[in-house]
Amino acid sequence: MIARNPISGVGIGLRAEHYEYVKREKPTTPWFEVLIDNYLGHGGQIQQHLRDFSELYPLTFHGVGMSLGSCDPLNKNYLGLLKKAINTYQPALISDHLCWTGFQNEYVHDLLPMPYTEEAAQHVADRIIQAQDYLNTQILIENVSSYMQYRTSEMSEAEFVAYVCELADCHLLLDINNIYVSAFNHQFDAKEYLALMPENRIKEMHLAGYEEQGDYLLDTHGQTIHAPVWELYHEAIKRFGARPTLIEWDNDIPEFQVLQQEANKAEQILDRAQTHAA
Picture 1 (cartoon, rainbow, N blue to C red):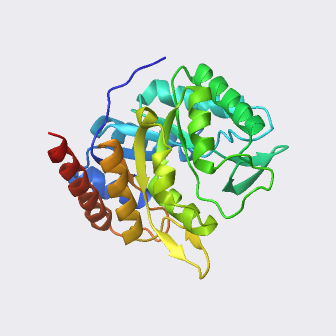
Picture 2: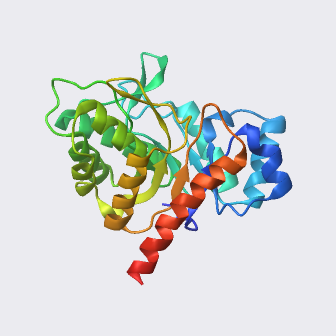
């Protein structure tokens, strides 16, 4: 499978609101993540933006279109467009979510969790293997935030995530905010979750903001990162060492400098970890 140049440090999710600023100011951000589904199948100006940024910065591709947990056949049209983009722009990492987003060609706008069973693990791992073989590269799967559980589950979410990674021989995008949101919503210990994660498969981490909704948390990616998530991130870096980390912000997008401030906080945590390891 294709090996690509590694990234490091704290990247930022590239959004259309910041295109002109980034092109004009060329901030020192070490890499950017693009929501690749927004670019697939489009020509003209949107492809020109992607081409421009790929020449300025290392990029990672993050998607929501594989629906890896679905029972529908993998969407070969989608994968074909994704493969073409990968070959053209050579992203450092390609990621999608450990979830399902549709059934019988009907799609929803939510990342729906899997039942944590042996059968589901084998099913989704087989589909990840198919996707990796088609794309000729390993992908990262991301743990999602959740608001529901299945009575049929046979293991914890953390056990399921680690098991799928081993079965599929894929990498892991560990979303720290999602762990905290799900831990709060389902009343499990977020640090115990970290303890079960396969260290050698963690190639990236995500940080984002949530909203408090009374008796549950909603993963909105529309606020600064909350203190408990920073604490959990610090614990993850202490446990696993420095990992490329992304600041995600998808709603109520602020000025680029606000995201840069969040990135600076994460960089400080990474720097301390590397200093202690030296």
